[in-house]
Each structure stands twice: as C-alpha cells, then as structure tokens.
Image 1 (tube, chains in turn red, cyan):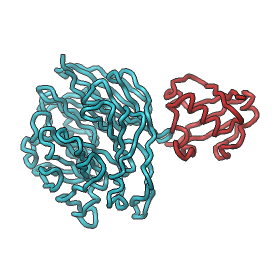
Image 2 (spheres, each protein chain N blue to C red):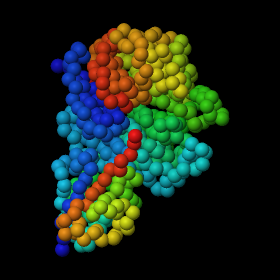
Image 3 (cartoon, each protein chain N blue to C red):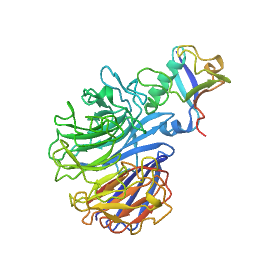
Image 4 (cartoon, chains in turn purple, brown):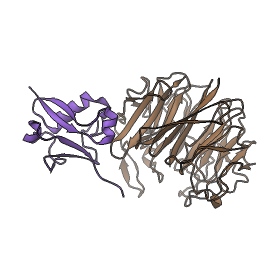
Length: 101
Length: 371
C-alpha cells in the first residue's frame, strides 16, 4: 500500500529537481521522514545529499522540516508523519533555514 | 574558425563568455546555477564539449554538474564524496585534533586524455577521482594518509586542496597544493605522495622551513617543461626546476610578493604572470591600482602591465584559480576579480580590456581554446 504525500521544496531544490511548485511522492508502507525522503530521492536523484547526508542520513544543518504548523526537524526520522500530511490535507515542507544578514 | 570559451565561476552562479580569435566582441551566457557558489569549472582537454562544474551551497551541500555540449545544457552527476577507511583527524586552528569532514570541491581537473576521468581537490583536503564522467567519486587516500596528514592545519579559507597539475609527459606524476599544508607530488598515480616544500620559507609557522605547514596559494607549469613549476605562496613567488625537490624564490622587483594567482604563457615557458596584492591583511592591489606583473625570465625580473587596467580606486582581489591563458597564436591572458570583473589581454599582457564588469565575485576563470 502506498500513500501520496505532498512535498514543498525550497526554490533551489525545485530548480535542481527540475520541478515547479509542489511535488507528490508515493511512499510505500508507513510514511515517515525516512521513507518519505527515500522515495523523494528515488524520484529525483539530483536531490541526493542535498537534504540529508548520503551516509549518516542526518538532516543537513540548515534544513528544517515543517508540517501542520509544527517543526518536525528534531523528531525521530522513523516517527509516522502527522495525519493531515497522510491524508493530503497538508504538505510536508522542506525549508532552507533563514540564515545570514 | 578558432575562438575561445571562458568559464567563470562566481559566488552566485556560472557564466560562459565566448568570442572568436580576435577576442574583441563577446557573448555572455548565464548565470547557470543561479544563486549557487561555483568554485570551479573546467573543460576536458580531450573533448572541449565536456565541461565539469563544482556547485555548492551552505544549505544544500555539494553538487557536480556535467555538460556534454559546451555548457549549453547540464546534467547533475554524483555528489557523494566519502573518505576511504578510517578518516582520522587533522589539526584545527587552535591546535586540537579535528575530524576530517567533507565540505566542498575546490578544483576539478579533467584528465588530459580521457573525458570521463576527472580529479577533484576537496575540503577538508583530499584527492578524489572519477572514471565514469562524474557519476561516482572515489578517494585516492594515499595523500590524506601521508605521514604528516594529522598535522595539516586549515588556512583562513579552510583546509582546501585547490591546485592539481597533471604532467603531460608522465600520467603517473601529479602535483597538488593544499592550504595550509603545502605542495605534494605523486609519481605513482596517486598511491603515494611526497611533500615537496624544501626551499619554502614561511615566517608564520614555528619552523619557517618545516616539511609541511606552508600556505601555498597556487602553482602553474608549462607542458613543455613539466619539471619546472611556479608558485604563488602566501608571500613569495617561487620556482623549482626539479619537480619540486627544491624551490628558490624569484619575487625579484615585485612591489609586493603576496597574492593568490600565477600562470604561465602558453608558448613561452619562461613568461609568467602574477597579480600582486598588498598584504595578507589588505587583500587588494597597492593604492587601488589593479596591475598584472609579467616576467619574461621565469621570475626575478618583473614588468608592470597596466594598459587598460583600472588606474585607481580598484580595491578587489584576484583569487587563486581566477587566472588562465588561452593557446591561440597570440596568447590571451584572462583574470577575474572579487569585484565581478573579467579582463582579457589578447596580446600576452601588453593591453587589457574588460569583458564583463559587474558579475558576482569571481572565484575561478578557465579558458578553452576552440580550434
């Protein structure tokens, strides 16, 4: 069984993935940060290494994950995504942190 | 008809400048990868349509791009740079051990004969290569495992491997330089390396003549004399005629011997170029007068080149990889500045004009001579 998850990427990653606007990713099994990012990278290989480290799978320091007005960045990567994300009512946001002057 | 293609890496994207052999009228194409830092782009000597680019961002990390049509279109290739084996530590600024961490690719050096083989110099300093046109990268760990590796300390810009020179007469011989470890040479294709810093003298390290610790900014060679190298060190212009076994200073009458870039004329192996910068605390030309200095004697005797260059109020820097030469009959010299200017001299440095003036800060300039 797969679940369709809406994902919003920051502008630079949309350019890299050659997509416009939101993308919808089919996730097999229980959708978590890990399974969602696995599926996202499989669908768009240029994103490999840009959101999380190739080897450790740790989120890059200036990347954040938001959904349903919550910061999920420090959740376990194996925690199921929030219900409204699973039903498609809310997107999963990949955010490039505001940094700099 | 012959022409040139100038590959410009900047803080905010890549630009491709093209002209015919007169190098008078230019087209400017870009920005490619807008908003990303392009530390370096370089074309394959074996296939000028093949170009590789190092694209990076503090947010999204390292990307490598490949073009097979002279920079018109690009394809994202592999960006997985993983150190081989136990990574260990190098020295941090405060003298403590610091784990080796990959940060970015500073320099891409395509093979002289195979467009699918490329060498990459990265920060923290290590030597990688690909043999499948950038899809996969593998470290040649002999360099990082050099006995002195744990003592290498980053320069102000990081522990970057920024210079890779291939010996056209001996595919097993490669020279590299690291800030601030120094220069190294392999004679076995990258398996083992020798520190080649004898003759360098650096007052900013406890032992000015130590085996390692010298802040080498850039090196250049002429293909017809691969045992002769020229070096712009943090301070001092140096040369060696025995493949780095011994260096001698050739700063001569330069007004300052601090700087970053150095290059060799395409047809005159004893004609070299530098852009003197005031000091390591004031990274701009003396008095705001942007000048190239040329030696036709392989160093020591230098002449100031100013015709067409900004005479005053030009407080820019020219970074280590931001000078290049073409190989047309009348050799062209190129350099880019942190003020976004790219200058060309179509006559070996006698006269200069700007190709563009308002790009983002220029990080690198390479030239392809198109026959």
